[in-house]
Amino acid sequence: MNSALQHAFRRALEDPRAVTPQLLAAVRGNHPVARIAVYRNNARSALVSTLRAAFPAVERLLGEDYFGAVSEEFMRQCPPRSPVLNEYGGEFAAFIDGFSPLHGFPYLGDLARLEWARPTAFHAADASPPVFDPGSRAALLSLVEQRLGWHPSLRLLHSAHPILRLWQSQVEGAPAPLPDEWHPATLIVWRRGWHVEVQQILPPERELLEYFENPGVFAEATLTLPRTPAQLAASFATLMRLQLLIGAHHINPTEEDKP
Image (cartoon, rainbow, N blue to C red; front, side, top):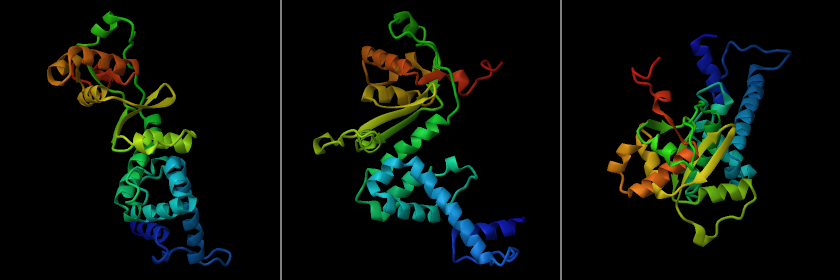
């Protein structure tokens, strides 16, 4: 199939008003327009199912029918760029932010970001964090001069809304946040072993984690971050206990790190 025919075929799949490619033939009396309509319906059904699986909390908040209608508009504006179904949906949060009928629900985009971070964390590359004994001061001191960076699965999310509580209320049956519990949240999403973890973190941990987004050395962080050495040491121990950091030679090896 040449590129022109591929383009025409894709256009016919995305838009029922597009011209059906002339090279498509009738089979057993079925006209090409009818045949491609069946194919289009199957393709769109598969994409909607993919979005439903990736964004269950968003769907439950919107309702099944309205989520389907939003998904149809998303597919029209943001068709797939990859043949891998699990990769479809990365633009959904940004689409929600810009979709005017949903402007009355300002938390939905961030909720979609949380939902998308979970499968992307699960499918991220594997890496072994340094062995760390949280009860050993010597173990902590041995890491302060090491160049460390984020685990490949780690995602850091900031929101003006309690999106973890919202997600738990829709997916896990937890109570929804009350009006006086509607506070901003900073979340981390990462994979530990085969399990995806989601946790809210405090500003000291967030600041130190942001420092390590570009691999660095903890001993140097103490010179730049606005926290006391004791606060930074406690935050560093938390990051290591949660297995959020790995040796930078696993992320972006320097010449001396390479075998």
